[in-house]
Image (cartoon, rainbow, N blue to C red; front, side, top):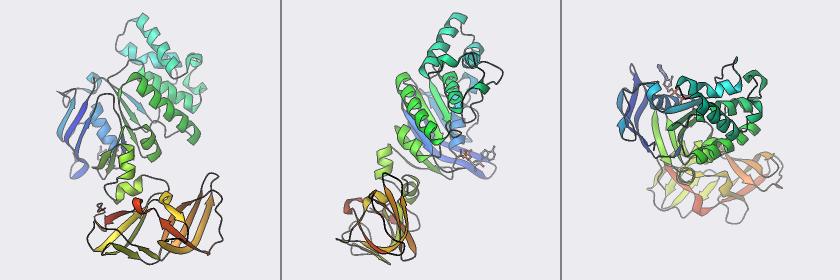
Length: 349
Ligand code: ATP
């Protein structure tokens, strides 16, 4: 069992708040991803769970036991960082075995555990090599094996894939998730990459400026964003956010008119619509603009329209092509239109 509770966690350095009012209950076996831009406080939160940093206020509990005064080495957590931190002079075998030696695990058990971990990350044939003789992905897997070798209660991973190229990152994501599911170890994973967060997490915690913006499953975060920060952080290209006026359920901005939007008060609002919920068509169009850019990617073509002073992104058919400056009309999926309060960014509808 490894349930982790963070209650009213604050971290201050002098007058600077690194982390504020963090409350989260992480279930046993859950895969939690802390997501946010650089400096939002995600690493600090993870370091507090690890015991490498003390909260200024609040309580950290693991399985009900208060951890605040428990030393990092006495917490049953294993960490993987972006630099891997393998010992260059030791073989991969020795590297993976290291945590077991430190903990005085009997020799016979050590060998079996190293081989099991190596098998899990598919490094059995590389155990005799030094880290310098491995590829980036293999080194990453060795670091993972070193973390899982002693079957800790909790995995903590801080941007473990950020040094890898895109293809390898995708492959490693699948491995990490597979291993986590197989070992059923509660995992806290820190990243600024929304794709990693969406694909790995049971629940995502989105942070900005030290504070949690939203906690939810990837589906909840994607379909039901609490505010414009969350809405624009998840999704690529991000949600279009267009400022305008709402009056009697009709939204208007230069080049845009959408009727039938009840549920929000009249006044200045921000309309949100994802590029994939926009369709190029003159029929029932909500928006008219001029083609500003066309980006074919193979399976989809991204169209950028200049609408008034704003640029609006549309995910068009793969075969879509158009000349720059050409006029184009777009209809939004009426069930997928969001409204936010302009200013605070809070969701209205
Ligand atoms: P990144 O993705 O860049 O690693 P992060 O979200 O993990 O960012 P943290 O490392 O948690 O961010 O830092 C949160 C804030 O606290 C930052 O503004 C950082 O400068 C500040 N901070 C971190 N450690 C200290 C420290 N020891 N003293 C003072 N400020 C700190």
